[in-house]
Amino acid sequence: MENYNYNQELDEELTIDFKKIFFALWSRKFLILKVFLSVLLFFILLTFISPKKYKVDADLYINKANGTNMMEINPYAIEELGAGGGMAALMSGGGGLTNELELMQSPLVIDKVIKENDLRYKKLFGLFSTKKTGEYLSTEKFLKKNISFENKKGTNVVTIEYKSKDPELAYNVVSSIITNYIELHKELHSEKSKSDKKIIENQYNIAKKSFDEKVKKADGLPEQALAMSGNISAMSAFSRSAQQALSNLKGQVVEGEKAKLALTEEASKVASLSSKLEWAKMVEEMSDSSKVLVLKEPQKLRDFEYASPKLLINILLGIVFGAIAALFAVIFAENADKKLTYTMLGDNIIYNIDNDFSDLKLLLLANQDKKIATVCFENIPGNIEEQLKAYRNLSLVKADISNEFVQSVKNSDEILIFATIGNTNSKFYKQIKTMLTEMNKKVALECLIK
Image (cartoon, rainbow, N blue to C red; front, side, top):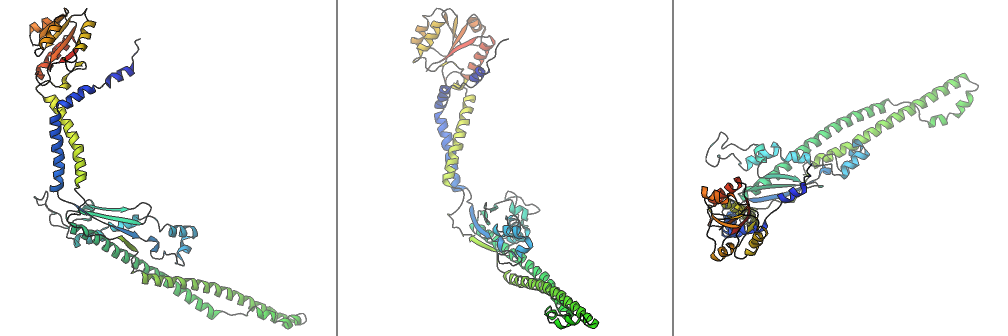
């Protein structure tokens, strides 16, 4: 079984003739320069003719730990959440800002922003009216373009950014979002605080009423009364009536202790609810204050303070796309050229027969026992032709699509080709090579005549 060398096949597939690539690029240097400079100048020109976009941004710090009933001084937030959960919530600032981002992007905020800034559907491509033309934008449409909300990782800071061709509009939109979001924030907290106060106040009133009723019904004797009953205790040993009196006295003391314990528990409950009610009242008063701090105010931009296009960025883009366009232009020109190009050549090439004739001599000397046909597409220089005639196994044949040409190369073992880049007809060159391939004739060298 024949051993197949996959590594050798891979090496052959990856063989790249850098010299041929260099000559191909060098021969197209003026084309490359023209295309590259054209693309570069186009991108530079775009900087000055493209509509300029302005970017206005603002940073908001949202104090989640300062929400209704969730401050550090809140006397019952930790109690209701549990020591571990309550402290974790307070220390972390109340968790992520997902809910706050949803509020910012909700119709409660965005619809007001759209109306305040008169944002409407425009004509399609600026030319064609549609059913929605002139109507206010929907929240979904507004959020799909030019606006972004970002929660900076690991912080309670949200960045709002808006881009527009109009710097005044960009500033107004961001300012409007902040204003309406803060108002919504206040409204939600106010409703929450009022609800908290009402619930706690109802519980307090019920507990206070229960406490007052138990105070009125409280009876029995204090525990000290039993200590003062020594004489009765002594007489109980001799008198039946004294025993009955002592028993009644003990019963009244027990009832008194029970009433005292019940009143203590009820008083503790009332005191706790009273503390919570005081806090709820204070939170209600605080609810009108915003829990949002604007760390970075939106700024009004001047005409030259646009975000895009930027000259430096466009220059870099022009360089990159100019190089790509030049490469494609070279590939297209090499394949579409009506004259012979470097990429149409095979693997074994003598790029300048005048300077590298010694390489051809080595081939001829090493193959003196083979018949070699030299297929000429162009006239060979006289000095080269004279040297070639010295080799008896070599025959000069003019390239032609004819029976005479076929007969001339039919008995040859190997083929040499002489052609000129930029002068030899490319279609004719490909036809002759195709003919040689079909005749199973190996092209040993392709020699270029300058």
